Length: 174
Image (cartoon, rainbow, N blue to C red; front, side):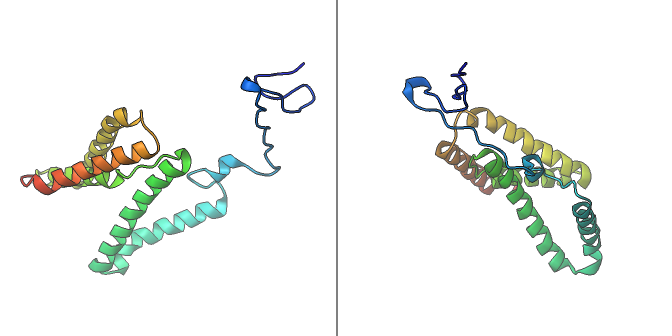
């Protein structure tokens, strides 16, 4: 008995689907390949966990080992690395192109700075800045989820330009 919805006949051959076109054959996963482990955000192997712990200890020791200039440069590197990781998640896992990451990072940074200038402690301001940036992203995602590909690229680029213009001209905040 043939299963026409799956595109595979009784003997495993491809059968004609809608419009008389043959369906694509199913792809077999090679033995020993675990795609879940390949795309995992955090490693599960003991050696990789030890590397993460060593990296964390080195990061905690950086302020004591280097001067203010190098620490500032390292902060910039880590900020851009965080943005690159966000782009990797978006582009690598979903295939969508967005260039509004800088705008969301700017919104979070401006919110954090504004709150600190008004007497809020850094930890609370930092968390609030992230929440404000995430909330802005959620608001922008409502209309942006209806587009994809180049249309999403143009929409996010327009949002980025809007944030740059507002940040440059809103003198009382910036």
